Length: 303
Image 1 (cartoon, rainbow, N blue to C red):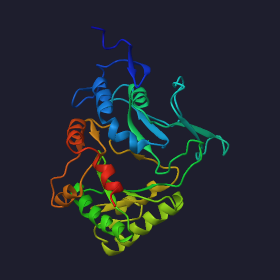
Image 2 (cartoon, rainbow, N blue to C red; image 1 turned 135 degrees about the vertical axis):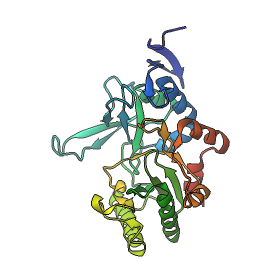
Image 3 (cartoon, rainbow, N blue to C red; image 1 turned 180 degrees about the horizontal axis):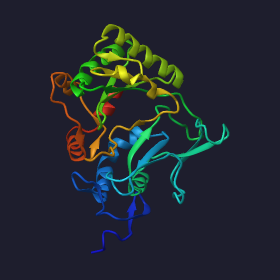
Image 4 (cartoon, helix red, strand yellow; image 1 turned 45 degrees about the horizontal axis):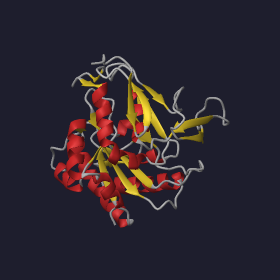
């Protein structure tokens, strides 16, 4: 048997890839290895890839596991295979002036996913806009609202507020899909027809947040001021800004345990408003996918 630290050649979707360090521990609290990370992404790919489709992907990498340092990576790395699709986007950062460009990968196959997972890209973050094959940026086809609880508020309060957001979105004719973030709170997504640009989607999300703050001032907050967040749920509407990204549904998180940005059902959130909802780990998510398939996709596109 080959040493787990040795480079191995594998065939994935007709592509030859080198993978290595399969026994390296990526999550110290559970002993989850790089090999298990690769297994998770291989198993979850059928439900993950449709939600990465045509989206520029920012990765957060933990080369030595989550007990050590991390770094964000937007540009494709040196030596990326020629078969990985890319898209070039103007940089909005302050370095180098307005002429800077970022060459993002677009992850659209299991081979792509395996390549980036082998680089310890545990977290996959995406914009809500998409790109056409010719590189033209399309308007967002999703809205996301990040529900961030300020202690002592937690997931219970997030569930209560999520139900309020769901009802407000329904008033606008939009169906919502909830995701426990794998960190502290929840993300709510709504499918959009693509008529609004990113600024328009951001403004609509802010309007919803302001209205709910006005109606439930002891529970909901729309302002970003951190000192105001204690015991409330901040509705982060700014995630819809064109330059911002959000963790993709079904992506792993870089925590001490292999938590996942896990799609949930509204029945779970209704029960969670009474307490008891927890973040989910990789094996729990795979078991749910095996039983229920792509809950997120069904909820997002229902009706």
